[in-house]
Image (tube, rainbow, N blue to C red; front, side, top):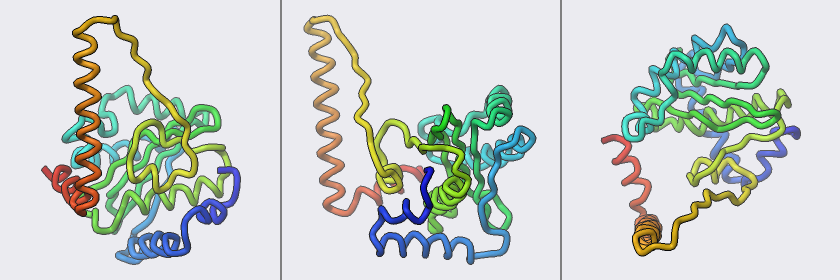
Length: 218
């Protein structure tokens, strides 16, 4: 992120850039008080976390996977400590002065980590996650404080869309050479293969995105 934001946007096709900018304009023009706020100082973290927790309670990440932004009291202290050494960036996206999406990125050296993201489902038609990521990148490229933005491990449309490079990584597990270990490893590989195949089939049928949305609303 040491270059210009326009250079980063050049990775997208002209059509995709136009779509991105249209989504951002549509969100910002939808009402007064719409926009992004950045939080990076210790005294700002309590306000950020208060809004982020209110959003997180309604996200599928927290409801289904208990993976929302932490609610433990120690987390606020962690953010404040990081902010004291300029090692965190946090953002809220507001719709008519109501916080509807959050992004929280701790830093390690010159690398920001994609750690916590969530948005209020009721505003999904306005693509708040995409709009927030776009506006946050715009600020980060302008600031030039951090060298990289690490989307971390795992797959996801959001990561593939906004990412520019990837690094192969793996968790390597060693098992004793027993029949039980072979059975569980083979079962895991089979389930993983079937899951991938089902995903590809649903994608071809145009049902994958619809099913994802349905599951997230349960």
